[in-house]
Image (cartoon, rainbow, N blue to C red; front, side, top):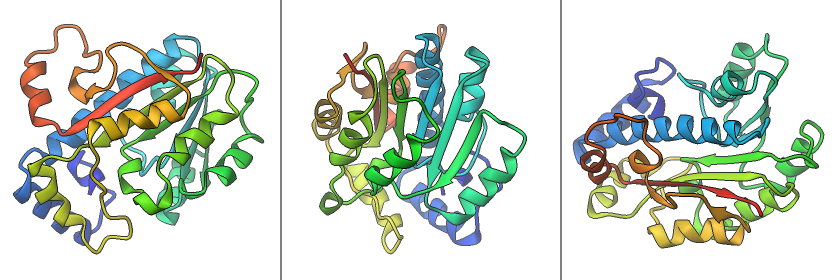
Length: 246
């Protein structure tokens, strides 16, 4: 569904039908997807410009325009990116696309198993140096019974001071409550949370939010000259933030 909203071609008829139904329930669903993707790019660029050269993208999804490794390497040519996803189609497709890039790896693992991810990542990344952990548009697919707060906490536990945590998450509004119906029956239904609940994910992970804090994603450090940021933010029911480990 996300790939469809971004204008990609890696989706199935069932995905397209569900995405169209979500658009019927929330006319801004595609806008939310695009703005979330743009937030990801700005966050990665900010972290890379801060000197970080290692990125762990958990729940990465299908490769699309402006991937983490592309943005990171445009700033730090030697940046390492480890993508994690549990969907076998995503992993196979990602590995094929990344076959010629020695600085970028994709592994198959479920974000609900952060201990396993940390163990495997430890063999590929150097946790004695800062790492950026990305959980972008992924934690809202984790049920309350699956310990969503424990995931960022565990993934940040072994990271060095100066590491970063990037999270974006759909928030609970009357519109998103209606639109979430399109995910009923999915393998990972959407779990809507309040901004305060999303903010707690940074707190338990032991990181401090950088300016401007946790905000609607279009308002997170928009590109200079971006028009109508406030109006766009009001339509985008995604919050995002970047936290730094002291």
